[in-house]
Image (cartoon, rainbow, N blue to C red; front, side, top):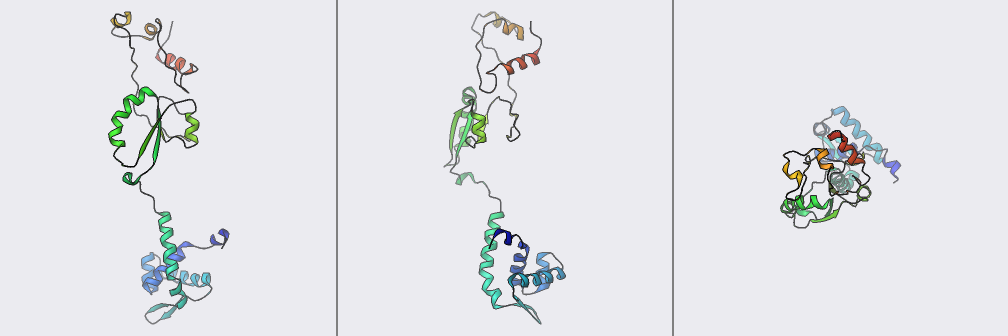
Amino acid sequence: MKLEQLAQYDIKLLVAFKVLLAEENVSRAAQRMQVTQSAMSKMLAKLKDVFKEELFIRTSHGIQPTDKAIMLKKTLNDALEKLDSLLTPIKFKPAHCTRTFRISMLDNAANRVIPGLLPTLSKPPHVKIQLKPWARESFDEFTQGQLDLAFNVVEVSRANFYQLKLADIQVCAVVRKGHPLAQKRQISLNDFLSYSFIKVIIPEFNEHHQKDDANSRRIGPRT
């Protein structure tokens, strides 16, 4: 049977068929289906049209399945069980998971984050964690399904990516002992920029200086 033909049928009729087989009574079947007895009778009539023959015979005590209905019972039950399995949400069970999760992050972030995460990540016995440094092509790898998660300072503006802010980054200047800035209790942007410094280039973040300039303007005027 073609998909176009299957689309013509109502799955609810198959559920009604199963309930009618179990109850052998239209009223009780209607109660289980939470429909009126009239609606149940209409479904019974539609079942006859679908299968091109009578499936139940009315008796003084209710209805009795025909040989055709009894013959279809096992096939019907198997079909509904498979449909139920298809529509039942899959529950994630860490103990049964055998996936390799690919995580990308900057090296300095990995040094701080991963040691605290390892005790939790290592509990599922078959799960593997693969770490990969953040690079220029990481966004494309996300799109292609080659990465599962990333910890980064990169601002994501793509609609198909979900992001969650974990914390604010505190800026810290590290200087040698005896450096003039070490004598100050507070360091302004102008103080910092008046000396040479080491700049960390982060792919897709500040490699073209746009983020640096924007952050500088937010902090305050520079002379």
